[in-house]
Image (cartoon, rainbow, N blue to C red; front, side):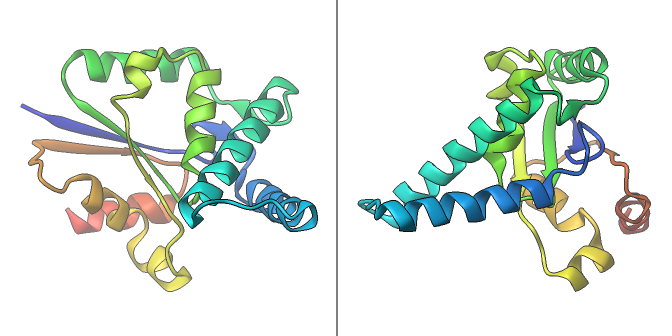
Length: 168
């Protein structure tokens, strides 16, 4: 019996809602790149640079207690228990900053051996899709190639939970 535990990021794992702050930081980083005339060998290299900077920003915000992990001991135990029982764990988020999610998991004190097993679905869908489907497209992507007996979504957003329940 294989289960999938899907956790939301903003307002479930972390507070406050971080999307706008992370987006603002990305704009600042891109301006810094342009101003300093940094060059990269590829778009992928530039994107990795930005993700690394976003991760550092997330860590700094957590260290300064400007962002907070909600119930870190409980979340750590929940994730570790699920993975120890051979279930899958995923984080589905309406953010395009997976490096920030990983930085938060590290800050929470989750060992790397667990972090490396967590699946990430981090992207921002179109607004109409977000309202109509909630996190369902994220979850379907996470379920590719694996059949689960049970999928459990933990999310602060009632719309995400309602659309998930309606999808069955």
